[in-house]
Amino acid sequence: MTSPAPAAPGLKPFAAMLRREFAGYFRTPLAYVFLAVFNAFAVSLAFFVGGLYESGVASLDRFFLYHPWLWAFLAPAAGARLWAEERRQGTLELLLTWPITVWQAALGKFLAAWLFLACALLMTLPVAFTVGWLGDPDWGVIVSGYAGSLLCAGACLGVAAVASALTRSQVIAFVTGFLACFLLVLVGYGVFDELLAGLFGPAGIDEIRRLGLWRNLEPFTLGLLDVRPIAYFLSVAFAGLGLSTIIIERR
Amino acid sequence: MPLIEAKHLSKSYGALRAVHDVSFSVDRGEVVGFLGPNGAGKSTTMKMLTGHLRADAGAALIAGLDVAEEAVRAKQHLGYSPEGAPAYGEMTVREFLRFAADLRGLAEPAASVRRTLALCRLEEVAAQGIDTLSKGYRMRVGFAQAVLHDPEVLILDEPTDGLDPNQKHEVRRILKEMAATKAVIVSTHILEEVGELCTRVIVIAKGEVRCDESREKFLARGADLNAVFRQLTA
Image 1: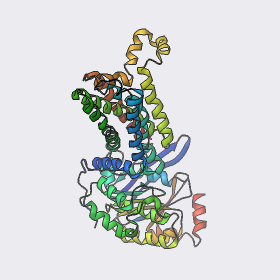
Image 2: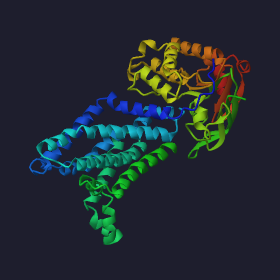
Image 3: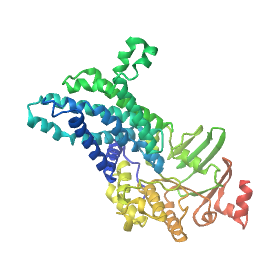
Image 4: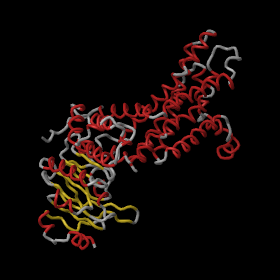
């Protein structure tokens, strides 16, 4: 009755992981709270703080302006459970003795979370349609803005994944992830310029400012698809993914 | 070829020497009772055998495959239930087993889940969230995921811990049914389990193997197993 040597599982473990993690968001009320909060903030920041309507311009740049802040806060909220929850429940030990590599598991988790953030982002499409109804926006620019925002979300999620791999507490994972993302937001606004000028000189400041989230998102909202911001967001996302994987492997 | 092989396994946590130069092998058809006081290194040894912990020195082989070098292939032959039988509490029993079946890439996941639910008598709680189950059922869920793929090697860390006598009996019954075709290691600190379940006994204390012998030889050491245990682990 003993089974023969199992066939190579290929991508099945990865697909199973991705499915479970994505569905996992909707098993608790967390997903719905998250989606509601994200939408409420995304829309109200754009209209009430950004003055999207009053601007009289049929474009979404005032909507995307606040996305680095939103992702800095909400990507760590969605990413806190990635590894912290496995550690808390003790299921990490189970997962790591199942026939899946840590890389496959980590990638499955990461992509599931990213997909979830993409759902949140897609739910804001009525804002775009409103602008389209009121005026005649450049849809290419809107699509590129959404693409940029999604990449920005991935970068924040990379940071959140590292924070989550380091602790068994989702609260600590969220707070540290948020603080790290918050730094990436502030750097772009030159908040640390005086401090950094002493360390790197005036020339260095501009280079460091380029690490800010908005600095990299802005070109997308203008319809400019540049290699540099794409590379920036993807490097932060995958550096975070890689680092979290190494942390789990070395636990 | 033995199905489980521990070759000179050692592991330290900082200055604490948890396991020191532990070697043994387990063949098909053997049920090894892994005994020792708390903190003796039982769980650490099991974690190294299952590839959860990396050994400082030595090697662990499952079905002839090194768990560190050929991790994924080795783990396909392995069923493991960690201490406390952790599981994803927010899933139902059926969802959890289905996830484990898919993750293992089983050819007929639905059939495997059905068979395992029946084997472990979990059908009546299959649609319940694992978080809502009593301890006895939760332990059985942990056991179920370990036998889901009918593995050749079964490693169970205190599978009867916290169960009532009926439930203990049930777990032993299932284990006995399966034992003939598998190599099994069961850690326990319940000495009576040795006589009921095991074909062989390994006693470990302070990270070292103190005795490794057949059940008969172990039981012949004395009528009072508690005294035997104290003397061996002193």
